[in-house]
Image (tube, rainbow, N blue to C red):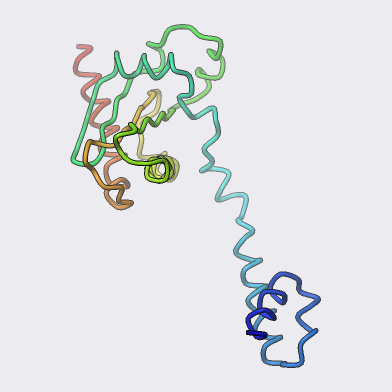
Length: 178
């Protein structure tokens, strides 16, 4: 029991690691502390390209409604994606912000999907999938994504679905305009 408490104190503050008499314990905790500290500081070059700022999100109810009503739809057994070209949107207060963004994402999770924990899990998976695969998503469009009724939140399935469905929805949108 005392050993476990010492681990927490040693990991929490590096100076207190020397407080205990067990030399092997001190080295081990300070080593883990340094390794954990090194992994917690991501490089700015890798993360700066893959941020997901608010300017890349569909945020207002008006924008959601526009995408859902005028957008083309594509679905698989996991997700449903709606897409609309950004230039087709009605003028809004955020026109300057919209014009500078290449692609935006909106997520809507119905309450029938599950409780708040389940809905937030879906949101995190969809957002992270979109964020990490931005280069595979067509530019110049707004997307609204929702889970399909009865689908299970699975990371690999969502990873495969996002780029495939966004491209499919854009193709449908382009073919309907001709």
